[in-house]
Image (cartoon, rainbow, N blue to C red; front, side, top):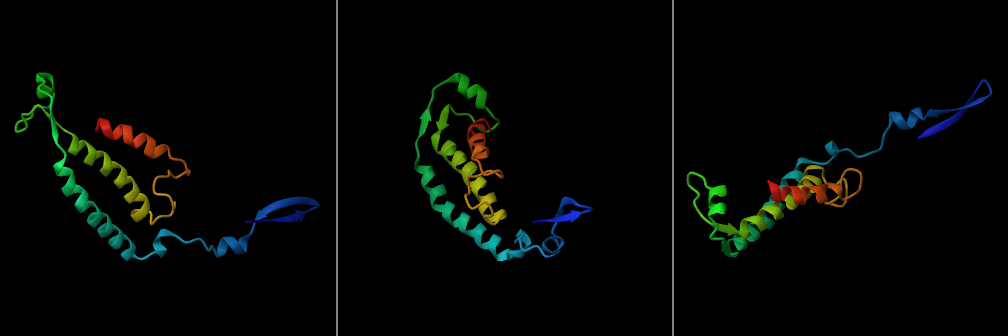
Length: 133
């Protein structure tokens, strides 16, 4: 907050020293560690059924030699495209974003999908980028 004073006949805006000396804003350090621990386990428990159910999503056999050459590793020789892994990866990207906002930042933004400026630009960028990772 600011106060207006008059110095030598001219109006001057100065910071209110009393308000600056006693800020009432709640910081992240004010919340207990239990908030993080409970939030962490809530996310883990909520994801367990999703991780289990995603194993039932069928794979698509591409039959493509190009796909095989592109994804060939020392122990991974297949032409199958796993939709379950793709769905799980995309879901974890979005859930990880919300985890940081809700648990690590202790829900200071109130909406788990908003950026620091209140827009949705970060989540809009994350989801297409997660496809390329």
